[in-house]
Length: 93
Image (cartoon, rainbow, N blue to C red; front, side):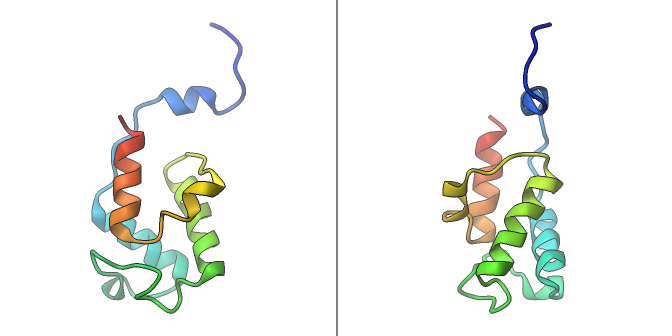
């Protein structure tokens, strides 16, 4: 086996694409809102708690929950439940 930086092997491990309910739950927990307020189309525009600080916290929660590293450029597009689900599905391929 060839040496590689910590985490590189983790990136090769197949992850299961999370279900919409898991993403909604994580958003609700991170933003401290009831999951019922995080709809299937929830976005930064729809939830006042999903402000810039909440967004950074959410990005860190996503990294921890699904053991991945988000690029800063990804932060700008991961602003809704559908965008997060699409991103997570894309990196699984």
